[in-house]
Length: 180
Image (cartoon, rainbow, N blue to C red; front, side):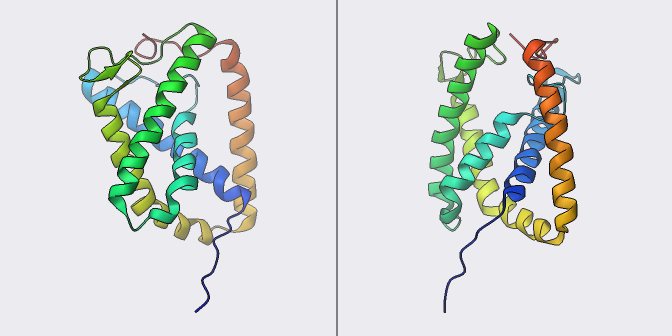
């Protein structure tokens, strides 16, 4: 039997990026809501998305999709890749804007307050859930959408994101509970 090669289109990745960015934003908002008991729009942007989750998720998918049947390897690899991504993102955001958007200095086994063991383990679990459970669900949903809807959604999301990015490049979201 010949194996069919998976070859998704550009809109597959654009929609996945925005979905993962929204899920990341939702995760951080809910985490802050339960730990600090108030709503805070987490991240640099004004909109409900954290691009680091979209970028990280796509990176994990590109690197580890073929390992879907090996969750322990996906866990360890996801933890490592996300730790490096989070560290570098923190470093460059701080250098670019002079603001630290997160600080794990008080957490166990942190590295310069940019990453910590709990965060790395959480990203390992998240990467495993993404590759082994979420991605198959997303692919089933994706094929059910018409090409017309996919293109329209991509155009609208990219335009909103570009406008938000331009605005926040000049005036990043640094409100209470966002930056340290």
